[in-house]
Image (cartoon, rainbow over all chains, first blue to last red; front, side, top):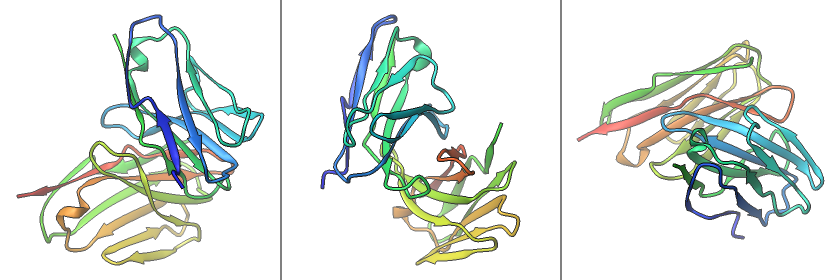
Amino acid sequence: NAGVTQTPKFRILKIGQSMTLQCTQDMNHNYMYWYRQDPGMGLKLIYYSVGAGITDKGEVPNGYNVSRSTTEDFPLRLELAAPSQTSVYFCASSYYGWDEQYFGPGTRLTVT
Amino acid sequence: GQQVMQIPQYQHVQEGEDFTTYCNSSTTLSNIQWYKQRPGGHPVFLIQLVKSGEVKKQKRLTFQFGEAKKNSSLHITATQTTDVGTYFCAGQHSNYQLIWGAGTKLIIKP
C-alpha cells in the first residue's frame, strides 16, 4: 500500500492564479481531510469528506473548494491564490471519523 | 470556538533528561490523539485516549487523559536523539473534526 499520496510536493504560484492539489489514498478509507499548517503552528482543517459525494467545511474553508467523486481521491482547489494561502498542505484519511488519521507527505505552497 | 491549548511551545533538554507536554481543552473531549512530526515531515499517529483518567504507555512514552476529559499530557522518560520533533495533541468532540494544539517542539541539546 502506498498509503496517502499528494502531488505536487512544492509549488510557487503568483497572486490570482489557481491550482489543484491532488490527494489519493489506497486504504479504502471513508474519511478524508485537508489541513493547512502555517510555520510553528498546529494544523487547521480546511475541508473534510465522510464518503464519496459528501464534503463539508472545516475551520478555514474560505478560498478553497473540494470534491469527492471517488473513495480514493480528494482534490483541493485554490481559486485566486493569495499570499495568505502560503502554507504546507496535508491530506489525511481515516477509516472511521474517530480513528487515527494517516497523513500524506504534504505540499509546500508559496504564493508571491 | 473550541480550542486546544498546548504548552510549552519549545522544550530544550539534554539527552537523557525527561520531557513533558501538556494540552488543555476549553470543552470536554470525546477522545484525544497524539501525533509526532519530525522536521520536514508529516504528522504520524502515536496514540488515542478515550476513557476518563486513562493512562497508556509506549516504551518510554506515557500518555494521560484527565478525569474531566479536558486535559492530557505526554511524558517521555530519558529522551534520545530519535525523539526530536514536534508533538501535537488533537482533541475530538462529537463531530469528526480534530482540534489541534500548536505543538511542543522537543530540542535535544548537544
